[in-house]
Image (cartoon, rainbow, N blue to C red; front, side, top):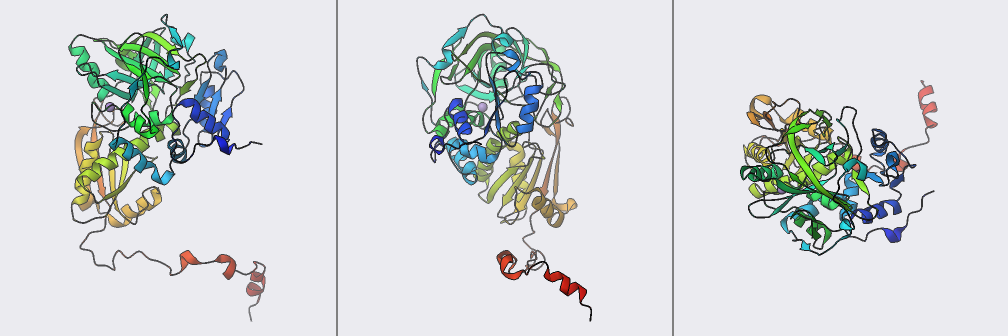
Length: 473
Ligand code: MN
C-alpha cells in the first residue's frame, strides 16, 4: 500500500526548483518506483524505465554496481508537467508562454552544492553511471544533460540538450544540430578557439522544459527557468572555464568543444523512433567533473515518452506565440505524438479570410525547421484528438486546392527521408471550411439531447429484453 503524503505536495503555483524537490513530490504521490539495487546500465535500466513510462518515474540504486543512482522517466504525461510547474494541464501552455514573455535573469553565487566534489582527473564512466539505452546505440550516452555554452563575442549563455556519446575517459562525441550551440561553436572555430561548455545533469523538469524553447539566439533559456520557478536561478562559475551553471544541479561536466576536430559519433536511438547514424561530429574535451556529495544521475531514454514530451510542449508554446504574433486568429496548436511531437503540427484558427491558413502554414514552417506538416482546422475540431483532426481533413480538404507543398526546404536531419544535408519538403493541409460555403453544407449533424441523456432514468432492467424479443403475436 502506498501512502500519499499530501503535506509534501507542492502548493498551487509552486514549481519544483531542483531535482530532489521533484523526486520528493513524486515519491509522496506514489509515482516513484524504486528498483532493486544493481540494474544493468546496459539496456536493463532502459527496459525497466520503458515498461514504466506512462506510469511511474524510476530510481535505480547501484546500477551495475555504481555508487551513483540513476533516475529516469521524470515526466510521464502532460499532467505531470503541469504538476511540476504548479498549474493545471489546461494552463500549461499559457504558463510557459508567460515565462518566455517575462524572463527572470539568473544571479551569480559564490558556491553551490554542485561543486562539493571536484574531479580534475576525469574518468567519465568511472565517475558517472552512464547508461546504454537502445539496441544499436554505439554505447553509453549522456542524454539528459543541459549543454550550457557562451556566445564567444558577447558572453550570453545558451541552454540546450544534445546527445553526448562517451568516446573516452575525458572525451565526448556530440551531435550539434544547426542552431545556437552550433553557431557559437562555429564562431569560436573561426577565431581558432575551442568553445567553453558545461553539461549539467540532474536538474528540475522546468529547466529541461526551458532548454527546449524555440527562442532567438542570445536569449538565455535559463531566464525562462527563473520565470517558471518564480525566483532567479542561482548560478555558479565553473572551476575550469567561464560558463555559469545551476548551483543546485547534481553533476556538471566542464569542457570545450574542440575547434576543427571531428570524430565518429552514433548510432543513437532518437525521437523519430529510428537511429541517428554514425558520422564524424563535434568533440568535447572534458576538463573537470563536479558534483554533489552524493549525486543522482538523470537519463532520458531516447525515443521514450519523456523525450517526446520534453520536446513537444515547449515547442507548442513557442510556436503558438510566434503564430499569434503574426495572426491573432490562431487559437491553439498541437504537435501530435504520431508526428514524434516535432514534425506534425495541428493549428486551430478562427478563420476570417480565405488564404489565411496558407500564411499560417508558412509561419509555422519558418518557426522551426523540424515542422514538416501543418494541418489547419476550425474551432470545432479537437486538435488533441487524432480522429477529430482526420475527420476535418476527410471532410473539409480538397488536395487540388487546399494543399501546399514546398520542395527542398531545411528540414530535420533525424527524419530518415531527408537528404544527408537535412533537406526535405513541407506539406500544408487547409482543412478549414470555405467562408463562402452556405450554412447548411457544413452543419455538423447532431442528435438533439444526446449530451443530456440520463441513462439511469431512461433504461429498464436488461432482463426486460427477453419478454420483448420472445413475443411475436
Ligand atoms: Mn537558444
